[in-house]
Image (cartoon, rainbow, N blue to C red; front, side, top):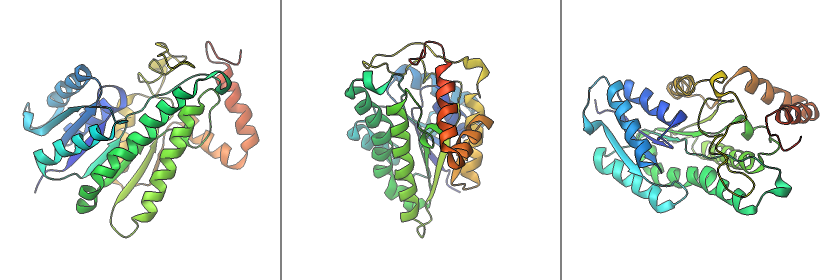
Length: 274
C-alpha cells in the first residue's frame, strides 16, 4: 500500500516538531513548513532518528515559508504533491500569540495574529483541499481553549482561534458527505516557545514566559493525543483538566468564567492587570 502523507505547518519547534516526530514514528511521509530554516533542519534530523525506516531523505519534504503568505502555502503544497502525489493529513499548527490590553495594543498586532493564525490555516487548507478530498483525508486545526473562551490581554489570539474554529466547523458541515474529516484540537497550557515569542502591544517579541513551562503539558503528550484523535476521527480534542473545566464552566456559567479567567491572568507575572 502507498504510504500516507502528512503536512505540518509551524514544524520548527514545540507542538509542530512533536507532531512531526510522532508522524515519522508512525511511518508517515512528512512534509514540513516553517519560517525558520534552522529549526526545520533540526526537526528533520529528529524525524529521521525517530523513523522506523532509518535515515532516508525520501520520507521528508521541507519548505521554508510563512503561512500568512498564500504563495508560500501554495508552494508548500506543490512541493509535497510533486514528491509523493497525494495528501492524506494536513495539520495547521503554525501560530503566534500576544499579551497586552486591547486599549494599549496597536492594531497591526491583531492584523499579524489574524494573518498567521487564521489566514495561515485558510491558505494551506484551500490549496491542499483538492488532494485531501481525493484521499478522503483529514484537516486539523491546532486551536486553543482560547477558541472557546476569550482571554483577557489575549484579544488578538482569542479572536484568531475563534475564527479558526468557525472556519473549520463550517468546512466540516460542507463536507458531511464527501468523507473529509475535520478535527479541531485545543491544547490547554502546553510547554512550548509560543509565550516567549508572543507579541507585546507594539508587536515586539516578549522573549519571556509568564508561566513555569516545565510544569505544563508536554508538546509530546499533545502530539500523541492529537494523532490518536486523528486515528479515531474525532471532531474535537480538548486537553488538560483546566482546559476542559474552562470550556464547561464557560458554557453553563459564563459570568463565573469571566471572573475566574480574569483572576488567573491577573496572577501571572508582569500581568497588565496589576
